[in-house]
Image (cartoon, rainbow, N blue to C red; front, side, top):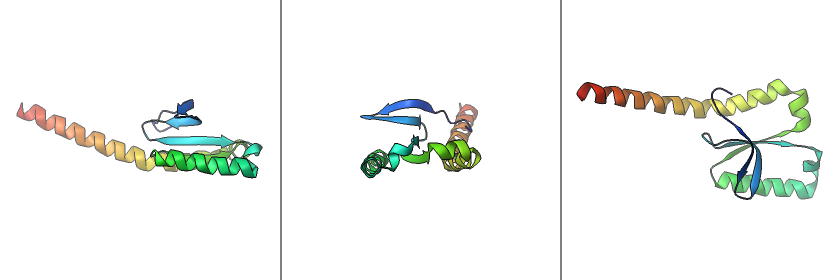
Amino acid sequence: MNGAKFRRQHPIGHFILDFYCDELKLAIELDGGGHAEEKQKLYDEQRTRALEGEGIKVLRFWNNDVLTRTEAILETIWDSLTPALSQRARGNEHKEKKNAAKEQIG
């Protein structure tokens, strides 16, 4: 999606993330009905905090929403990617200018 590469069922520590983009440190978790139970909700919250502590942004979506509101889910993911990808593009542009300047000097 927009050049970002996601891995499916990617391990981070003792967690397995549904989808993960290492470059952007973005995890996407898809939750079924079992995640509505109180014990699972608490675990998911702790898990999200632990991942955020590692600098990973976590997006959570209900499976049903992915199936019935696909465009809205994709838009949310896209919106999360855009700032990080823009920053990456600016960094690449800076590197290209720096390399061009080196070539002119050298």
